[in-house]
Image 1: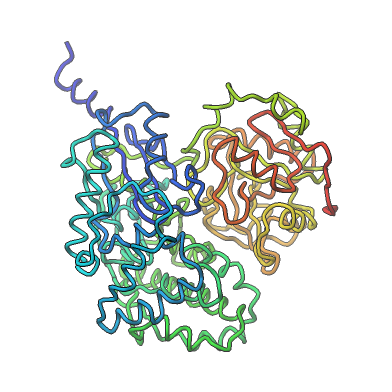
Image 2: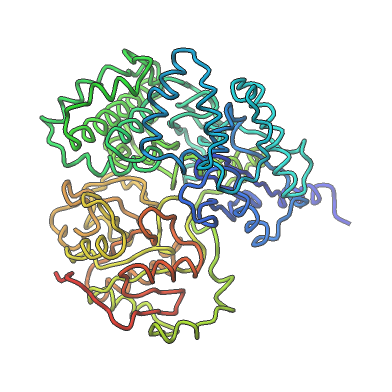
Length: 616
């Protein structure tokens, strides 16, 4: 018989937790014995970019893939304490709104009226009843959203909590009372710290986002894996200002902020300073918090009026500059009060890689780590870390290959269906694929498990030779249809990165979350994978340990071309989620100008390849 201590140890080593983010870009994550073994966003399965709501299909695949059913779970939770107005989730407004709808939302149809104390019932019933918001699948029962519940947020919030518990209980077959509701920013913070390699020594965690359970900024000190909340704010409007500026520039908020960031370097300092003066007194840093200074109540109307007449690139430059300035002031203030120079950051604002660069460059910052995709989708991973906190076994995220696995379908896939249309070659080596890249071909790669988050990290990627300037035009014209000013990214062998990238603090960036300056001597070798104007790069440092197959491919390219890096962008058509399964990849291959599709080690090539103009 096992002794009591052995039984306790065995029980400790079989802890499984599942956490769910229900909202914009919904997701789920599963932990076993302190290690995240699965994480995926619903969009990958539904094929609706940033799909909002309950991630039913992601959970369904998670249970099927891992075999961990509800009976084996030690805890289940949502990564929010509740939603005050569930009508926006029901309507999936971030998916279904047009630019005009967003303008109306922030303008006179809703936001401006609400600030005046109006109930806006007509707007809320439009969201509930209009056909444009009722043509999608919802897994929650929203029948409780009668007129009185639409305008009584507290009642609606409590009913929706019960419905949320019931829905998760029903799918996982766990008791409703066992479903927990976790604080949003606490989940962000636990993801930021435990997802990183930092442990034991003092570290500062910063979370910043648009909104979550009454806050949009927190600051924590972590020592020996114990969290202490130092500061919190509900007035940090960096995300709100950025989101509204994105809309004012005619792009989709909650989706195209990265385009504003990519546009910002094109502005000249003298010209961006003019719109910057219009907004520079909105916020201030005080006591480790970003708080209001001269912020008007109706922020959207203020920004729309004050920024009118300024050129688009200068607006983008001003917004980016203001975000960086506030972030740097915040970090300096935290360092001044704590003396701690090691930082991790999460929350939607942490997706701003240029802001992260500005923080990393500060003299007071000794080290910075930013986990992949700090937006709300990652709170499901943070929720697992939080649920497991008492076990002292939370393990860092070595890689993000955590989602759907193409190996589940490869063994039964009927390749004969493709032979009439494409050339097929099995057992293709890294050397052969690297040779195609070196010749100027564009190769899409789908391999193993899909990456969690917004960045393709080699398993769902479009790859090309970064030394060919014409390759950017070819990919944009034939495949990605990206805005002309937007840069591509770079995957580079970690041990060779120092020859190309300025990184004196040896900051780790395995997930494309921090921008760096490039070194001029070898810039020509990687220029297609950098920002074409300011020559910065958003790299993925690839190691043999954490990405062995992708490392092997890049290493073969290095042997052929003498360049230890390749251009890497996500495998998807513009406006669609990153591909998930083989069928998704084949559809993208068919509808684009891709030369080749590599499915594990099977190469699918178009019989007539137009390589375009991509010579060096």
